[in-house]
Image (cartoon, rainbow, N blue to C red; front, side, top):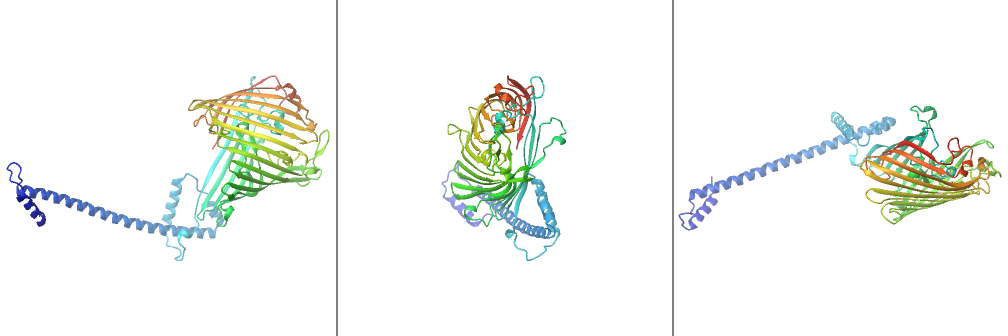
Length: 548
């Protein structure tokens, strides 16, 4: 039925239209057009009504789902609280079962809780709202490091190797690891983290490590299996304020968080480790923060007093922009009873100090893109082992050491990258009055990308040493040079030119030589041993290395 108003309008238009026999529409044609228009309008009104109905149903469904979820969460929370009160041990075990990345497992667990909640009535009507209860997102992480390979000389026989095989290696003089390792070393790191609704975080880490040089598949008799780390951290504690607002407490056995190294030399710049406790990241202002720690280490038995000496290390690490200032004091009561046998016997020290000033560049020493780190270290007394703080109990009270470490990494082009390093140390009165240990290492590694899964690595090392142990451990005074060249075809599957991506599988050929005077340094070191003396040595082998 055509509405009256529309019909009246149509008639008026028809009457007002000039009489043109070839174009004038009839009344019936106008009514047909208006009827079609009305039908389309009605269809549009129907669609709008249907959409409104569906939207209303969707709103009701969402509200119903929210109410159901709130009931399920409340019931599940009450059940969890009840289970915790009844059996804390079982609650801890359950909380440790979720694996990171296992989204489907977590979803199934939530679904199972929801089903159980629907099957049981609420346990109490006086429960607090879910939003006010502590909740946390937790998970496990697994990280690891490993290297393993074999090495042989040009006669297909066993040979000497290792980043510390030179006489200077006894006091930390590394010469580079590429094509110069024959051991298997593994670190397995297990971590559990959680964050509570109040913002606090917890972290537990345990590291299982083993290292050895046996090539056999079963090496239980030579294993050095060890728990190297086991510690807990508590962070963002809600009751902490001011400078401590975002600090982290820790206690246990660990490597200090702020250690750093020159990886391709296999040499730490500084390494602090032991058992103790401390606090990280006390933020004094926007540009200055500090960390404080107390570590304990053991020096071993001293027959004269029948005791295991405890060495205690108090450390502060301070960061201002790219600069790091580390200060440590050491105390080992009764360690001065230890006697170092040398031409002139000297007692070991019982106190010491250690300092490091480091610069962490986010460029290649400010010259180009890349990164670089530089550190100057000083130690006296028990702090004169400046790389491994507190690890050497034979140092005299007068021992003094200076050390310089610097390295950088930069891409030279889209196919080449470059990493140079320098490591130098001078130590005097170290184990006996008048002794000195002076050495310097220059090292550089080049990586040439051939294709996305294959690269060629080249490494060269030079080390000069001037050592005068004054008869300590029957060592002889020597001076001379060592040099090493390595060529290593390398397979990897990602970021082929990046120094710090793994895994890698390397084939290698290494040539090394040194001054013959170094062969007489000691009767129990690598140089001068049977079949391994100055005149040039070739080593060949294969190695894998990975971390994640």
